[in-house]
Length: 215
Ligand code: OGA
Ligand code: MN
Image (cartoon, rainbow, N blue to C red; front, side, top):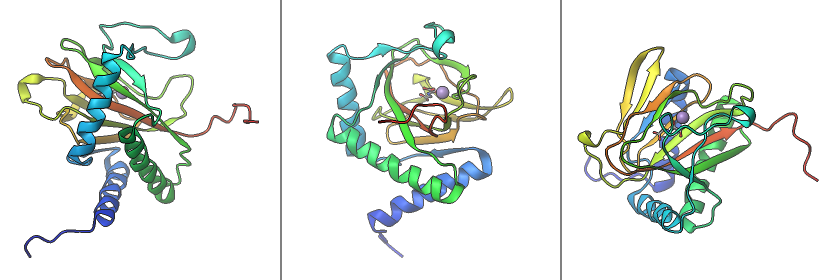
């Protein structure tokens, strides 16, 4: 059959379904062309505008008392998404649909997404780590969406996914690709990039049982 086009909503639903099946089967999911290119371009522009206005901040590692900043371990500068631009809004909307489908099928009880833009300048990366904090494991599913419109092998900056000490997947940070993985079980790292590398990293969380109720 030629030129068979699925209606957009159905194809989006199938893409979400594939992520859920991958998460169940292998704990991670790599999805090239998940976001459409216009959205990728708008998100990258929003990130570049924030950088221009000096609104990115050096990222930290660990939480509370363990919170430190070491550029040799983690070299990105970040800005938390708030839905400020139409592009952010569209992205968060698509991720909310993913959260909904994951909850319906895997009963994870995800309540929110926290996500930030990230810029890794040339010469930086993020050494092997897990995304759930040692003393607080509210993060359940991690996601990364890439925003560079082109990427070559010699640019480095791959996301490497580990099983124990072995790299089992290496993902080029090419615009439109969406990667998801379980935050508590999948060690990963960002190899040193040779170019400015733009992305959104996010975490679907469960509600903190110790948090005070909102009044
Ligand atoms: C992170 C992270 C991966 C990437 O921000 O925790 O692992 O490919 N990012 O940017
Ligand atoms: Mn990570």
